[in-house]
Length: 462
Image (cartoon, rainbow, N blue to C red; front, side, top):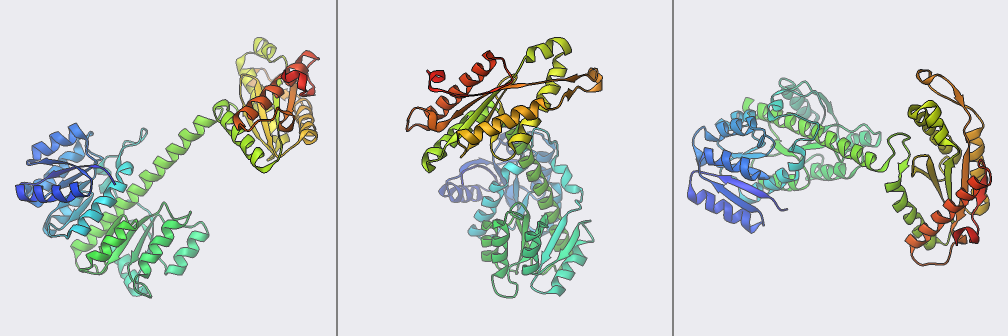
């Protein structure tokens, strides 16, 4: 996993040692020797991760976390702090993404770095999101499932963590956790002990939950026995967002675990919003905003894919090219808002007639195309006639704000079927030929008086 890492430590030997380790792991490393240099380099180079060593000064890592979180240019860069346990809570509250003991072994350190770099895109701000690290101080009411080795330990976790968090805690065993996912009732976050009824069963449950569609986007914290950094390393590499002590033996441990749970819930919700934004942008890219149908940009490549499938499977496909009759008169007489209302209703009627049999797109102002995979000429003609009748069968009522008039609308439809096209091994050529034939047949329907269905002929494709 590549990434640029900024290392800050007051001792040259610490900086050099860590730089050698990370460079050997193929990371790009930048070093800093003072808090001010950290702030300057972080703002200038925007590293993927900042590591603050324990030798920066007694309170410097905590102060630096505060400073980085207040700067909009650096607030969303994950920060790994190496400090003693007496600074653990202060560092987490200041905005540290993770805290490790300076004596941590190399495998655990590298696993933590890999985990933080996996989360880097989540921590970066969305175009519509303005959360800052300060939001970490706000307790999140989330759905947390506790899976411990004994019911008593799970109840203990619930009692101790409820003092700090308003989350809803459920106690499950491994089977119950998986059954809930199967019911589409996954938790936002799972806390899982490494060993359940059998050694390593918790890690297997983690891997299983991350593989399920319903829970793959949940967050995970693995509870690890004291001194088992080898197990913590495996848990992080399996996708756990954090680890916690199996036995919460002090107020510091309990509070640190509560902060970690809150941070994981926050990251999960940021990730959910990022996915929703990406899906929204993807939808906008392939759909017509007025009618909700696919747009030309999506429809033409999809037509080529359908043509390729048809060639592979030895099946036909058909195309309906449709154009509203005298649509310009509607815009001229009643305005473009009325024209938009007609387009929306016509699109809905086409989809109603075609149902799930094909893909419909708006490819021009008043032009629509439907592609019918696996459907030959006779069935395509029946569907085209059904579309024509559905569109013309009822008047289209304009909204009252546009006068409430009722308009009669008709379609001219051209049909082309792939088995009528010239032989070719190129799906793109087959798709283009079929679409061209359908367009020509639609123009023929226009010239013959409109409001009719015409099948493509060899002459129309010439």
